[in-house]
Amino acid sequence: MGRTKRRQILTALGLVLFMGIAVYFRLWTIDYRISANDTELLRKQFDLANREAMDESAEWRRRYDSELEKAAKCSRELDEIKKSRGETTEVSAVLNRKMEMLQKENMDLLERVETLKQELEAEKLKCSMRNM
Image 1 (tube, rainbow, N blue to C red):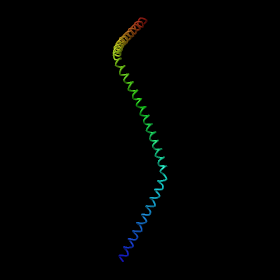
Image 2 (image 1 turned 90 degrees about the horizontal axis):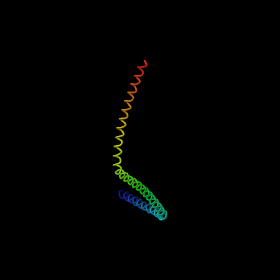
Image 3 (image 1 turned 90 degrees about the vertical axis):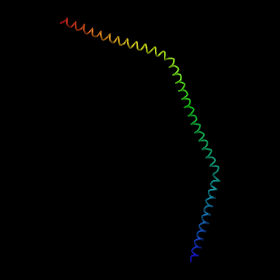
Image 4 (image 1 turned 45 degrees about the vertical axis):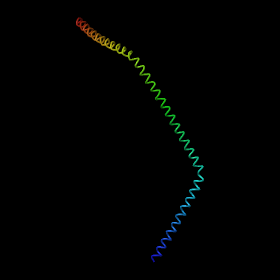
């Protein structure tokens, strides 16, 4: 009884193994036929993806070049400003001195206006006292 049971199990195992191999070969042939027929399609898809990648790369390169141009322009402008600032340092020192002198003169004039206002008020007060 133990031998027959073992024999049945081995037969069932062999049958399952044979069916598994048959299914595997069937799937392999289906996959092979599909891949053999689709090589042209795959090649076209690859070429399309390659062109898209090159277009995208060209677009990024164009963006990089334009940003590089902008940065170079800004750098040149900054250098020009630095150079002109170096030349204008003397001019700005003269202008600063003139500005200080004008501010002092303005303060003196404001003080003079204030004293004149006080004198005017005093004269108005004198006139109002005489009329009374």
